[in-house]
Amino acid sequence: MRSVGSVALALVALCSPVRAADGVDGCCADVEAAVTALEAAVARKGNSRVSLQIYGQVNRALLVWDDSFDTGADVVDNTTSSTRVGLIGQASLRPGLVVGYRTEFELVMPASSETFNPADVTHAQPLTATALRQAYWYLSDEALGQLSVGRQWPATGTLTLINLGSQMNDAALHYDNAFSIGLSVAGGIFSDLKWGQIAHEVDTLRGNYLRYDTPALLGFVLSGSVGEWDSWDIALRYAGEAHGFRLAAGAGYRYSDENRMSEVKGGASLLHAASGLYATVAAALRDDERSSLIGQPPAYFQYLQVGVNLKLLSYGNTTLYGDLGVYRNFNVGELLRVDPHTGELAIWGTLAQTEAARWGYGIEQSFDEAGVLIYAQAHHYRAEVVGFPCDPNPDQFPNKCGGDPSNLVDLPMRPWSGYVVGMRVRF
Image 1 (cartoon, rainbow, N blue to C red):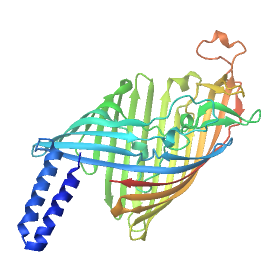
Image 2 (image 1 turned 90 degrees about the horizontal axis):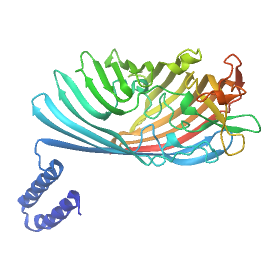
Image 3 (image 1 turned 135 degrees about the horizontal axis):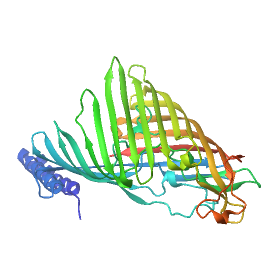
Image 4 (image 1 turned 180 degrees about the vertical axis):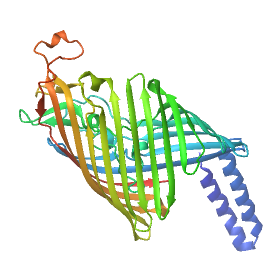
């Protein structure tokens, strides 16, 4: 089937010789008007009151990694801002009141957040090829706010990812998330502990939610949602500028009855418009029953990114940045399994304390008119893990392996480094 655009080109091509030879100016005007009406009819699908927007992006990158066992290079889809395509439809019910829908799919084969060392026997899951990111309808009133239902971010979603500087780096793990952390024993062995389990930015993932957002008042928006995992949350966001500074910030609270978990989280980013200097911070505190069972404090993380947006080229901003992050006591109370060079995992003991520290730097160049962003990054991670071995007779512990929580052992965990070069193209 030919597209509307190809039909339009054909019609204009037929009309152009007539204009050149006979000077008939009305021909192409009529044709162009007909093409415009045809395009509108196709987009509306028979409903003149519904607008349709199609959008998307492609973001592919080269990831070069070193997990202290091997080095490798993979062409990946960058899940910091993944390849996607989406539709937004909207219709006006009356002045100030609209109803609409949004659907969005990811095309992420292979996803950078799921990449791992092929020699790692702890991995059995297949990589994701496509995923439904969003699918919800909304009812928005200028005076009353917006109600939305379906697959979407809950109220506290993306609070820890707020950033006015870098477009391609934040507090989340996008490259070593699925890599197993190795131990420097017996010449080096894999564990089943992934970097993404102990370095968590506590962002609330998308799911099926009922969400409400108030209208913006003096730059503030209050949001609340209920939905998956018997959870509810509330968040307050702010966006504004004054005295040459731009500020974006947000904070929220989330509780999940199913997971017996509560979280306090937030982030803020401040940009000085004249100099381009900016600073971004994010933090969160998570309390769950696993930590309390072994007498550990709540898990938390802290993240800082500082940088500068410069107008070095006429095409768009050049961004330079560095970042630091600390993630502590995530995944404690869980069993640690290691691969003793047998191709199988054996239970060693229970995690009592975990810490992941990261540092890195990067550069980005935007080409605004083309919708292009080119970027290069470096990421370095180290881990400190403390646990206690299983009881000599673990069979008496059907779900755990017992052991003495005071018999703590520092485990020699191996570091991870990665280097990324990529490009995102939006349409």
